[in-house]
Length: 301
Image (cartoon, rainbow, N blue to C red; front, side, top):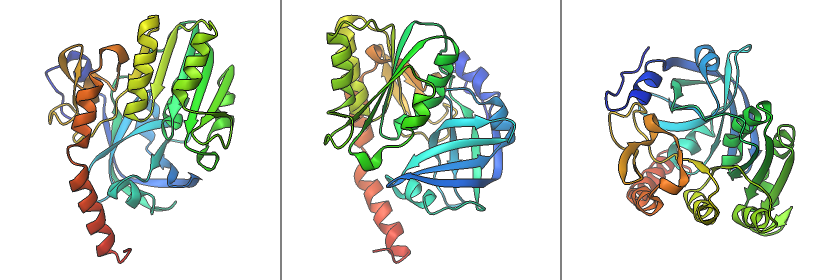
């Protein structure tokens, strides 16, 4: 199955033409990484062969399911599998969390989005907040393979939510872990760790951040005065993943772009984060109602 292309962007068009759909994709392994955070290794050979760091898939669990985007956290072409890490934050991600190895996901479309720009920059600071830690892993690995000095900052609310610290250490020259409550590592936020590096005169050639939208906004504001090139991965609500629905439109440098085909990565200093944060709040009440209805139908509340 091939996805239709969006004529509005040449970059998006070439990417979409290589998109592959997988039906009834088997979950071969499931792991609980932390409370409400699940890892799924899924059989999708064609996607695994084509996936590159920074790309994502759009999944649909069943015929009545909604489509949601999830970053490809790892891919193993030899096994024909991709790895996704999902946090239970709404109806579909909670329902996904109930799936076990041996079950299948109805539709997986990917790889979508443009790959990360991997090059020899020098000193690269990779920043992951929460589940964003899984999303920076393939990029950090690729950056290390290109002989960059990789400093990874991992941010969590508390010690019990930490995952993949050792996995990131294997592809980083230095790892800094922060927790909001100080239960592990440095007390504070990822921005505090980055600020400390900057104030200590650490040379930084590139910052690459993935995590909550407010975290990425604050990182952009922190690096802007210092002229540090900063890239963020935007994962707003997406629907078709091909740029035709316009749901994931974002303002970049005063121009409308679609995160799914023009991104998901953009120059952080060009992103209108205030507009994006407002748009992401539009349907929170409806999403809550949908989630509550789903739980009531299953006798969960």
